[in-house]
Image: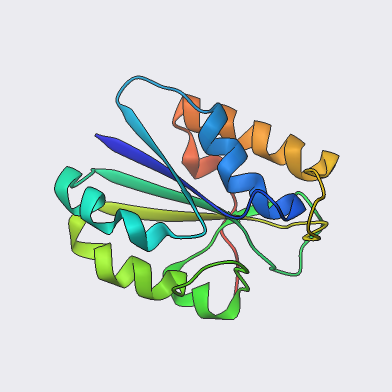
Length: 147
């Protein structure tokens, strides 16, 4: 079993990209979790499922152009701003680490995080690209964020 977890705040523009991807991704053999701002609320479910692969998707301030996306290595997570979570993602990943064989965090550079805004075209297009990559299970196509 593989799990895709969409993280973010659907009231804050591009911060909703993880939720957008989770709502629009469907593939046999995958479970989708729309975690919103509280991925930690799903730790019990992750520990119960014990997925082969857990992919977390979220808006991330990485200093890239809006809509660019990267796999964020665990050691770089503290250097990247993930804006709307109650618990730092590094802590969340460490907590559930033994429950999933592999965990991949995909960050998408936002353009606008203002309340009441829609997804920007650049970020929505990136979300659609990520959905296609996940459907093809070609995650290795995504560049890795460099420190």
